[in-house]
Length: 436
Image (cartoon, rainbow, N blue to C red):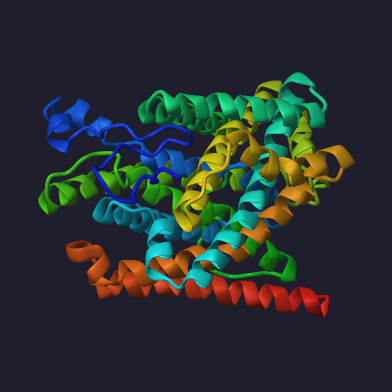
């Protein structure tokens, strides 16, 4: 078997799925293009990661939360987004500092059984991720073009392959395609937010941390699961590990400043989109006969009836763009996970076929799409600690990170995030088992 990217040898560009790595552009050469052009060339990985933070699962969970509880969970979305920014920056830093991605480091520094166990759970999480992305894109195709759900799922797979094919022709084309789809989602919800309106005072009141009933707790777990995404914690380090060639630590520190900006802008846009989803649902449906709205299709119909066809179309187009882009990113992440943890690579079509099976099963059996999306986000929430704990353990070690090792405060903050999610998940499981 040929060596995988990151297993030694010359530093290469972002690893492709089926082709050998290409030489990475040097930092000093990119900076020589000028302040604006050179700076823009260094941005991109966080926008790819950000797509996973606004996938169709977010639509389902945020709309359900806003309709049922109004602005109550605004603080959860903002907190989850701030957590995501820190986590994704640490993942990006890991790639820049070590020239390895997180799965590779887990394989190199953890016992073999632990690395294999992390790989197995990561594959399960990949299937839950694909469930949200495929079902959401299928619903988007149905709402925009009237395509039945099962054929729409197959169309989603074909389009996802097309987007991934751009990566084979250079990482920048892939990044720009994903950023364009992210922009469609952003503009779609910006239009809907302007059309629906919002209550600034109620939004401010939602910043106060509090919970309602156990149903709200389920949504809290789902929001964290939909926002702090395990597979892009792994992926972000792969996107940055050899994207730009640096001559020394000074250049790596300079590159990290741009990665920090990349995370702030990319994840910040994702946070605005997530908040807009909840605000639109809270403004339009909470406290009305539609407060119990439990499907994306019903939300679309409510927008059409109460606001107009333009708002409904913007919503459906945003959902479609979200599903198509996030399904491509999810496939890329799955390949990175397998390459890193067990040094194996399977054909892309086979991987896509395996991970999309649960989604096609949901579509083929006619199961409730939105309920399936919410359930997938809860599953994702349970997978977060398996990505965060290794990230914390590895980035706190100077022998791995060198001068880029975490400061004690950073390690403490990330550890607190992991502990909070673990406690939340344990409590949620206990609540469900008790039947409350």
